[in-house]
Image (tube, rainbow, N blue to C red):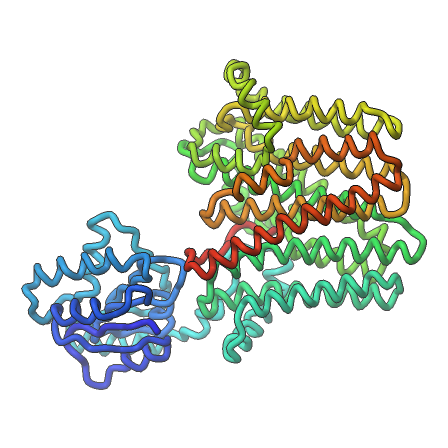
Length: 605
């Protein structure tokens, strides 16, 4: 249980002690700063502790924001400062200094909590100060100021503010206007019944899997039920994040579950649609796999661009200025958010088309919409990259290298080609990666069954991919290299499975790409959470992107079509088992080990 230490002169009739207990704190009272230091030392080091001025007047939600958010080691609001285990040493040092400076006497005018927070700032320690807006948090100096603060508290409905802040600040049109107006109340209902965001996330996954099962029946009733359930799954998907923000229940495990389950739900639904179409005699597995490839590559473009530029210096361009200017015009904001087909608009479109049309039409619309969105966003980011004078950091270069997912062959060629790579102009590396990827996909699509040409092209691709990562990825367009690698690998698997032209080849390819894509998403979420890339042994075990591409082309060259299907299935199962077991072990261990909680408030997926 966290501990709150009340300092300063107690105020008769104050509700601060009850407010702290309502937030789960064990409350202790210090008679003077020296006593506060003693009580602080008695709190176990693995527990959260807070110093709160006994004269504090403010909203309970202001205290909640300042004292219960698990994402930050140290946080403060006027009249209160808190530390998690990672911030305890810094808090203890600051309290000791302030106690020594104050001579151990009671603080009559100023606030010990505020002085400690100021001391933490002075020594360069990062102290989170949440944005309170119209919420009140103050330490009044006299009775008149106290009465005025209490009147301000009474005039502001903190529950309304809490509900409003539960909704993500930046979201898509469909989510903002069609889901969030009522899903926030579902989130509050869940909070009052003790449900956790992870439980709601799991319910959303189960609902989406049932929707996929309904789609797999291939009946009109099944398609209608699938569309309705998919929308309900999305409502729950919004609810889990709103519940996390409403109750500040952020966690490392929760962020990972929310992110990975979104992908699992969408791609499982694609598979359900393909199975349902097959029951009606229409084979759309190639379209389903194409949709998954396109959507995954879109996400990798987002991830790579953001990782390359989020900490770059001199990070401005005329294109970015134009974008900011357009965002200042109200209606353009929503148009631009809609045309990129974020998850709300995308799932709504899929649900409606599933219920009213056929899986083939649904996939055609999805492919066209996602292709337009990908072209729009990628073109804008290329223009920004070419017109800005950004200097990228070593951290950004390492993140791009991790996202590249190069295996032993690619890294071996990179070591050999390091000197030639340094002499190439900045734009050459993405161009080399693109040429190698186009070569292996084109040859795989054009070559006849049983020929060695795709494998030879894959060998060339391994060389070009090694050259592309042979120097630090700090060029203006180097963020394009990871999505080019993803597209090359996934599309090679797609065209070889389609060329096999036997039952089961494309579903097996779908499974293989899904397993590999999970590994690539997992890499992104580890980097975002500050945990770094997956271990090198895992990348070596599953071959890296160039190794898997070479293996698949070799299997296609030496096996019959039916044997190739079996091999793809076995490879998909093997990759899935390895990456899932390692990923689950990592995230569960990180959660139990007290890894910093994260919560993604970025662009809608």
